[in-house]
Image (cartoon, rainbow, N blue to C red; front, side, top):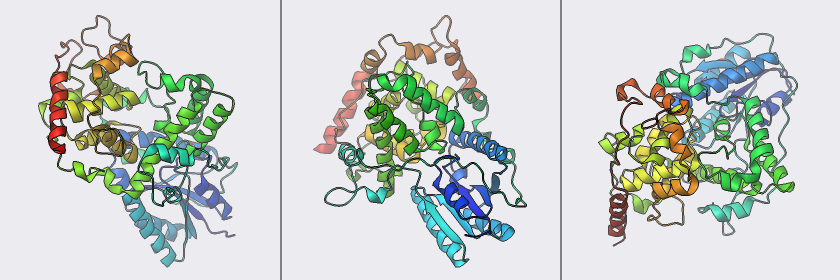
Length: 472
């Protein structure tokens, strides 16, 4: 026990409940100083994710103030900022929740070593994932490279109960100086899109818990079927909140387990999706090249185009391909910051197969545009669809965006919700797209809806020919 202050270094754990690092800091016995650092990991975020992070920080800051605490904001290299705060406050310990991106691992190891040199206790905690990546192994040793066996291995594992939020966070007698959140201008790159997108965000721990409660009470029963229907509210929407740690994976897990115990038909399938997200993080930890290169190295020479400025890529980005499912999905992303999961597969398949464009082009665009962006999930999702990732299905699985729309949205309500052109009275969601996109695109709801930029049959045959040439 000590009376020296403890620094709580917050990163992607912007909540008070089920926060092991917060509990560890309080258990040290002295004052706790919550800190968030704007370092390179923040500076390199895409426009939408960086803006959405600012909303989460504002919410957490308000919650801490209501408890008599504060969120100290500092900008700079994390190691230097922490050293400065230790000098200013006399802190004897730093606690944080582990992250698994390769750059974060290198940074955190370096900082832990440096803090030990300064005789400052450094402690990292679990909490970002359900299972630490090094604890899930195949029977022969090593990590899982295929999802289904991993699900079977972990589905019956015990997951510790979620920790309650503390009733009080001990405050220091005097607080170190903090940057103003507004001075960071985290939303600057969003420009006018921020105002449109803001209406579709569910920000903060309290809102995340409300969203979880709604899903478990109203939607989990039909989840297995409804999750594939882009025109209905059939998913939890919690990817946004999990991204910033406004809710923890194990809070979601236990809620799903309780739903399954009471007989909710869709609960187990929802738990599988939580483990799918976990699978992505584990793969990133064990094979970090998944973020930048083909996970299957034999795909390195596949003849994808990497011309991000090609007119076809521009049409794809603008939601003007002439394929309603693809265009509706892209427009939904600009208005809401997110995209329906089935739609993500469709737009990724269309880009990488019908247009023969490298998955990295799509990955980078999603990096910039998604408010629920997650490095591991985005990379694995793109590679899974492109065929270069961890998937047993062959490359020639090519989604037909027309038949997919007919199957999962037979009334075509999804395109009507997001595509204004050709509608006499388009809904506000469709019109909002034109308010969110850059003015330089020069688009108007009065424009004619475009013809298909690529014939779907021809695009499919071209992709199959490239695949067959690769195999021969």
